[in-house]
Length: 81
Image 1 (cartoon, rainbow, N blue to C red):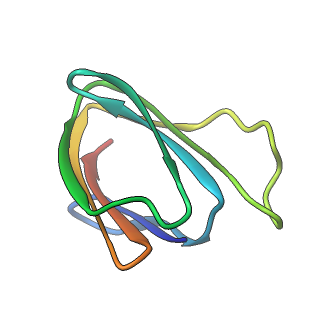
Image 2: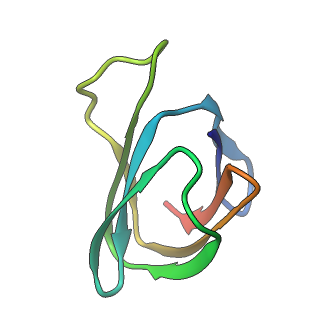
């Protein structure tokens, strides 16, 4: 899936990912390729992701809050870091 993590001032990360873990307001959420469309509110935590050209283990991107939406195998995250 295409992944874009954006904050109000810049793009934090853009590229392809196979698995993304989001700190949703209701608990941790795992998103895989071709997930159903959704919009979710994010809480304080870390966004982690992995894929073919990415390391399986990475520290993650810490966020304060935000919103994420999935559509057409594209996950866009607007977050405050």
